[in-house]
Image 1 (cartoon, rainbow, N blue to C red):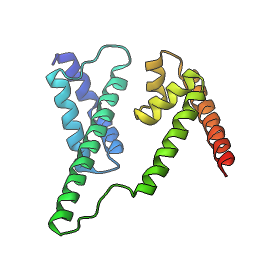
Image 2: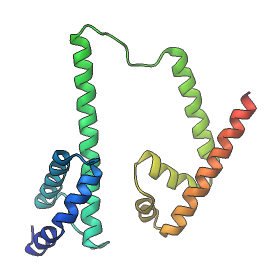
Image 3: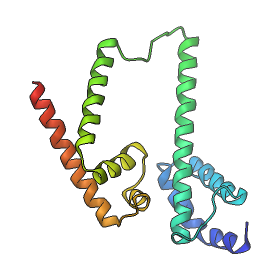
Image 4: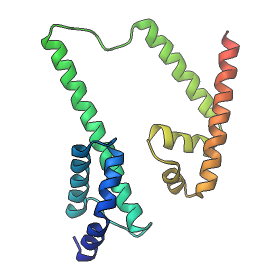
Length: 174
């Protein structure tokens, strides 16, 4: 790691820890772990500042992404551990939904996909990035190469149109 990068990281450390703490829901030990992993990414060259944004914006993005990775990893471990405990305790509850519930979920998925297909392309794109890819509207704007204001407008209009389409489909079925 370059000395200049190390100096910038050191200067941002108090703010970075505060951001990590926020990303971890106030859990100090998780925030420390997330921040340490983010520093390791920077030191190993897995997270490299390209200059596309300010250094602080880039660093906070690395911390946010690392916190999301840690959360997903923790949730996965907990689900595995929970299943193991249930098996050891003799509780063989099948976590899959019942066949009737699965049909209902499949129908809802089909309706949602159909409604998304009716949206204008940009509205569908921003909704997909925000909801399915867990990105912020500003990150979606950067990916789509449009302004933040445009992304926000597509997001709000897309949500309103999607809500309207889903309510209309729901009313027709009843």
